[in-house]
Amino acid sequence: MHKYTTNSLEIKNAIQYCDFMKTYEEINNKIESGSAVVLTADEVIDYVDKKGLDEAANEIDVVTTATFGPMCSSGCFLNFGHSKPKMRMTEVWLDDVMAYAGIAAVDVYLGATQLRYNDPANMNYPGDFLFGGGHVIEKLVAGKEVQLFALSYGTDEYPLKELRTYITIDDLNQAIMTNPRNCYQNYNVAINCSEKPIYTYLGKLKPNMKNLTYCSAGQLSPLLNDPYYKTIGVGSSVWLAGAHGHVYSEGTQHASACERTENGVPSEGAGTLALTGNMKEMDPEFVRGVSFKGYGASLALGVGIPIPILNKEILKYCTVKNSEIYASVIDYSSTYPAREGDIVCKLSYEQLRSEEVEINGKKVKSTSLSSYSKALKIAELLKDEIKKGDFALSKPYKMLPVNQGMQPLNIKKQGGAK
Image (tube, rainbow, N blue to C red):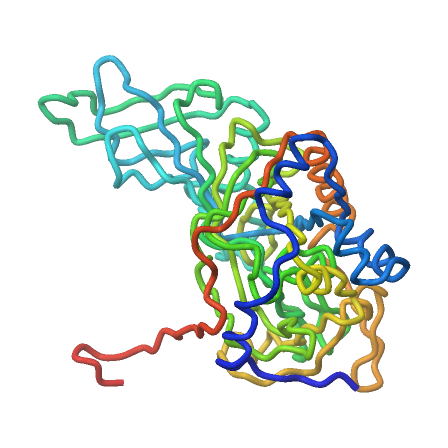
């Protein structure tokens, strides 16, 4: 049986101190000289089994981790440049998807889940949500043409009140992907215990527990290989859909004070990352708009993060296996929407990846929204870049909080009364 422990102040303090075998500078010097030993999180498991932890920690410099899947809390800042005559854009649509224009004259933020104007949404349930912000972002990264339509109230220095034109990413001064919440450390497994089908951001769930869905790269996933955020922090270098980006903050809903197994791995959502990178450097293979029937539009994104092997403790975390990572199965027909805490059971990613699991004596089909093959490809691409000396590591200038909870939104009357 697997045992569960909760995070404590003692754990938090203990993990901040250890004897370092290597430094970031030493590893980056080896990367620059082309002598760094780099393995993917998939390869390192067998390597450590054969070599032993001590010898492997001396040899290995970097382990590459990766994930590819829907990341709803994503978007981008765009700068269009000034038209002639000039315009202070107050309402902006890109291929009929509204962008937020409350920033400056020609800056906007386009969110991945924003729907196209007049999309019927769920008026005819379940809606198809065929096009949204994530699809516009995909088109821009792919170099395709997008229609820009803007309105303004007009001012003395910005007299133009209406504009319609067509742009590609090359016409933009800046296109900066800025994502408040990516790379969930772990996540729910969704199931439906009711007698009717339901449609969620984890896909369609059939009634009476006929299927379940999950979304994680498991043993390849970045924060599952660094459960206490010893190397991934604010300022860490990341491979963001092919661009060289970085972590700019803890992600929204970062909730690290959670139930963990004895190896430190959370069995619930836990940590998240806020990521940014230059869209002009991205590979369209790893930026894809997606539609969830009955739920909405989103963006599937590929992320790779290198973990420097500073000591054998860090390497030990990188040997985590799918059989050692557990996720909570939640009933999305009742427990999840009601914000209740009950779980159906816990399953390992080894069980989930077998495509059929058993819950309470019932066989249930298991499907992943995260692509393990894409994640493995990203880990290999990042490995190659590091070995060629094209990708250096950055030491975080601020570590992610290890024992942080998350506040719910309690609906109250004015003055604080519930």
